[in-house]
Image 1 (cartoon, one colour):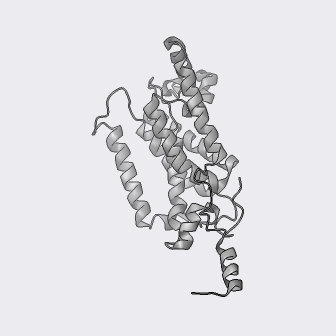
Image 2 (cartoon, rainbow, N blue to C red):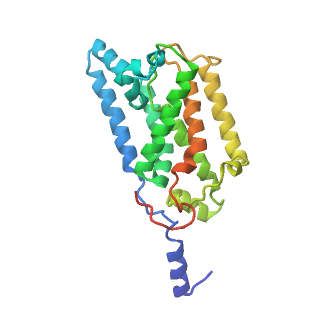
Image 3 (cartoon, one colour):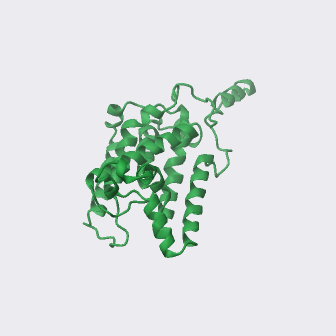
Length: 258
């Protein structure tokens, strides 16, 4: 054990950027807190509406494939805005809670790595691909689609692109606790050779297909738009590198601010 105070102090200072054990327990990016609050406020506001008013609100905000049968121009303003607004509605408290938990877990990691503006742009793209995937697999259907699951699926895909690049030692544990921007982002071809990434991909895809196609019945009141989940996930997996900050993974101990 090294007892020289000068050397010991220097080693501690060099390692400090990764050793974030004294960070607050609830270290959640502000953009995640804001989105969670917006989810709750919208859901609470809907509870105050009369059933007819709530139905009208959902129709305006939800993503409905039937709007686009005669083209985007015929769908009106909602045909454009619903590509975004459908993410902010949830069917019930369970739906809201599940999406909030996953946003907190996966979205926080991605937001810490790429910052607020890039995170919002990335989330929009994942949600957009989720909606488009549902549109082309449910062309002309009247059933509305609501919920942020597609975008959050993209967050999950993005997270597995970099969390498994962490060294399996104390240094790597420090990166996961603190400076996520110091973790290298391997090319997708490299990431897909990692057995852990493949395992998550297989389990996640099978879970969505099995639950969404009714092999495991979940009840008609809560159908799952599993194709939208897959669309969002694939967008996150394939496109995350376009949103990653330049220099991420190259400057260990760099600034972690938004």
